[in-house]
Length: 337
View 1: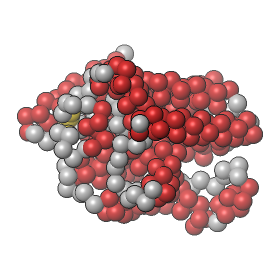
View 2: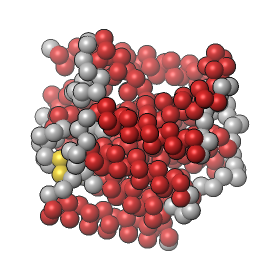
View 3: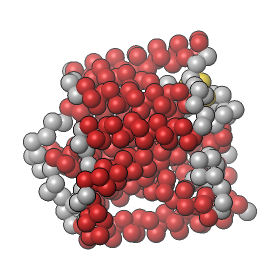
């Protein structure tokens, strides 16, 4: 019953925020500033998903003041970006590093095992371990912003990741506080419902804060319970992280500013390919996101089965990357014709 009331309250709050956003003309993506959003929709949308997530997160999650503080901090960076008050990508990156450094060091949250021999040797150094953890959060947060171009794609992906983690905890009778996971899932479901209609986007603020919270949950759980391969954690977060790394490499090869948005991400190529046949941006948008998340469901489910085998998970990651690159290359050539 409590879950129902939280869903109801969150939905009403989301509606109120969207209503006032429309009346005040704030947090509205009118497509003039968002090239990659304009590709997949002709309608203006409210960038209220991040605000709703941050507020509900602070209301629903008990205690854990530090997590809430840094959650709001990372949200504000994206919020100011959504308001067009921070347009410089280098300034955003600097502020992200500042906030994440404080969070990682104060919470002593460091990744020190990767199942990669030489990297694990380096991670024995505490300074390098903190640096690597901050780098991983940066990749995840900005990669999430990269893939936030289709309705339900980001929210659906992180729902899959958290549900898989929660199922893993329950099926193995692990003594872990699940309230944080469950409350985050509730908030994501609320955002998913509104995002599905195409009237509400996460915006930079939503992409940053959702990735930050889910990233923390996954890393914190691995720090608490290590009786499975760290590569299972990698697969739970692989898609936005790999999208970011691949985009940086791709843009470097073609001598394009890595901080400048473009319409050549995999999800956009899938959307463009589908839209040729469907000729309806809204339907192509949802279908493309669904196809990607169905694929991710397959990958995460397979990883769930082999969660303790680093070798099998490593093979799964390699096959995943190969499939990604082949698909990207094929679709890029097809769209470019």
